[in-house]
Image (cartoon, rainbow, N blue to C red; front, side):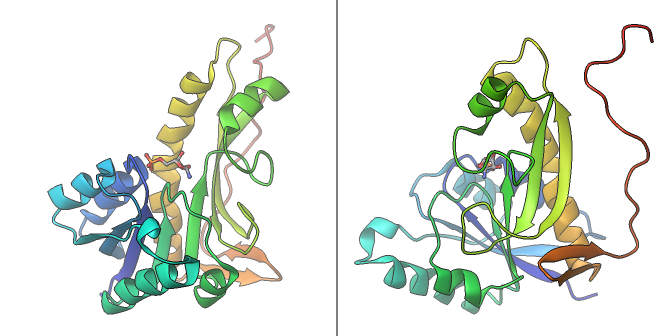
Length: 219
Ligand code: GRF
């Protein structure tokens, strides 16, 4: 079986990279990480790649005269590695329309909210401030606008009365580590089609029932 070749772009901790590394370690997983690129030297995720024996490059945006040169370097590495799907995993640079269009429907991102709610940074603070009962995370195809694009997989996390941003972030992150490998699997297995900017998934069913927060005290 030919595995889908992934390029993973990071800027920091790399825990989502780690979840992909672990998923790919299973011989039956239909994708493999061909290359990791960090725009930040010393990012913890680089060590994770090294430990797993995955080749990695630092391409520091500050060393380029502009975004076009930076992205040309990134594209050069991705092309040389034969990358077919680019996974943004805590990559903290905005990408140009040119880059996004070049990788149309072959570029995915993970965001720690139920998009299209709570785009951008500082998500968990804003979720708690808004008083919503549920948050979660989303894997989506990347489009030119930030945190925008057809949604592939979401996971829902109940907000607890005692939550602070860090406790909520930790529970959401645990679900990120479930859904990023799931999204990659669905793409690699050819189950995903984008039609009219919506994702259609074949051979998978949605979960039954509804989640209600809080639980009815009569129960
Ligand atoms: C994650 O919360 C992800 O959703 C967001 O950036 C964070 C990256 O964390 N885009 P890590 O580097 O994967 O641990």
